[in-house]
Image (cartoon, rainbow, N blue to C red; front, top):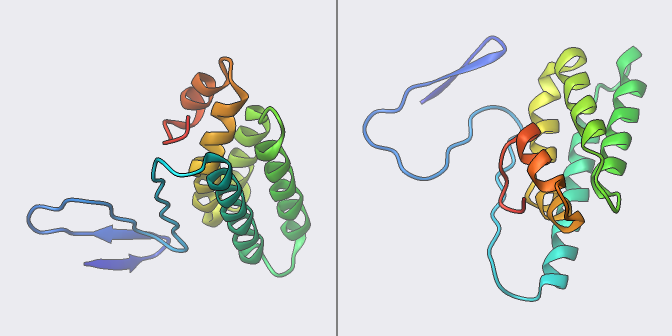
Length: 143
């Protein structure tokens, strides 16, 4: 049972629980399955990722001084994630900016950063980028 309590949530679960659980607002749960045409999967993943960016943009404040700054940070994040070599420093900066300025959207931003498509883009860039990604943001299916 989940009860909204101010800015947070309280979750009590009785008995054994298996599988995934998501608590909060505007959560996104992604599933990646191996196999199939990797080119087709990469295109579908990138399409899903861009849709998540649009969902985030729709959640930005309607007006006010942070609206334009937040929109710029989302644009920076999208550019950093989809670059031929994803920019981890920008991803970290944007995540931290939202945590300080718009904490109610910090979870959505963090969710974008650890999206399976981002992990796949980071892994595809090769080198030590994947291990640095895991160090900064934790493990994902693609990295």
